[in-house]
Image (cartoon, helix red, strand yellow):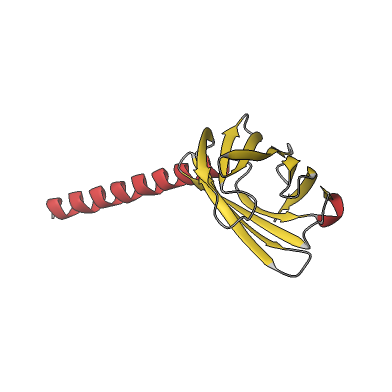
Length: 163
């Protein structure tokens, strides 16, 4: 009986430790303000030279100390563009999949609420983005500058709200 009770207590202790460990891990990941589902606020966003997407959703999930970004956008011509990347946000280049203008990103976390992204195509930087999550954690602004495939200057400000 004593051996059975010891195993039951050990099993409960192990389960409790797992619950605590999982809870701490989830809490640590949840504290990163960029993690979540973000909807493009088209009315508050500006895309120069344009055009502005009809809609866009960015799902950012925690992956270890880094993030996985998955963007699903409805383009003005009715097509869909799905693209993304996974980065430790350590300034090392990572592949971008699904985006016609970028094939790599170099992501750096500059503070708990800000970061920079340099997008490249065929080894050449083509755009730079600064991300900032508001103190209330409900709004994210992504300001992108660079040059598009036609040689035109890019000057975009995308405003996202967390859903």
